[in-house]
Image 1 (cartoon, rainbow, N blue to C red):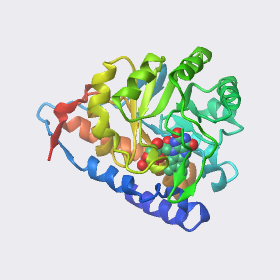
Image 2 (image 1 turned 180 degrees about the vertical axis):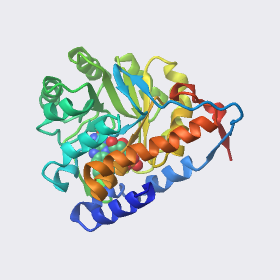
Image 3 (image 1 turned 180 degrees about the horizontal axis):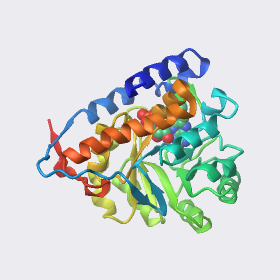
Length: 317
Ligand SMILES: Cc1cc2nc3c(=O)[nH]c(=O)nc-3n(C[C@H](O)[C@H](O)[C@H](O)COP(=O)(O)O)c2cc1C
């Protein structure tokens, strides 16, 4: 099965079930269309004479990966796709040399997942701050490699007109610093979409930020991350690792993210498609197919490693 088949088969399988609505976007769904439009604005400057075979491996925040393509933070609707569906995702990602990232609800079996694959776990800004701080403690005890905090869920989450996560309140800078003080491993603030928030996150001690519009599950009419990357990259000035997600579907999309200075590119829905199409093998195939596409492009654009990607690769139209 090629990537297009996996996506088509996976989406069709999910749409047949009640959980299919998780693929939709908030309110007007403008973001889903805009994500594609923005990614399609860029083409590549081919430079292939004297090409050398590219190497997609990278080391990020102490974790060795075969690819800069990782899972974006997600739990729902994975548990309802099979009793051991989270474990299947973990194994598929591990086999592909990638990283797993859980969301809300925080899975009970994080320690089991962390034993299989490099694991990051997100915590939401619950209005009940005691619950939030306890969750931050709990995921560390489970042995996750990175801790993620969703700074963009301050008004909960929403799919079309249906409010999903509730009881969330925006975080204050002081609280970001309190979280930093209690996290003894890489700490990542997810959902940055402006230079102002990026600087606040880095000043509070973020080891990485995820530039993300939350895959159209928070607010309507948010930009695609690449629309705001330049201002964010300029503002943080190399002081943190930048991760990006939102609408990335192919190796070509990933290279665009890397060209804008992201070190990792996250996939949300494609992981669900892979899992729905072919379980653990489907998840592995999604990462491997995209990585294969990325490697071809890197080789033919004189990009020996992900760190060599830059704006010089892009021809905008
Ligand atoms: C079904 C679903 C559940 C999600 N759950 C979470 C979550 O719990 N926490 C979080 O930070 N982001 C969550 N996200 C957002 C993803 O982490 C990511 O930002 C987004 O899906 C990337 O866009 P893509 O789906 O177009 O790849 C979710 C996205 C989807 C589609």
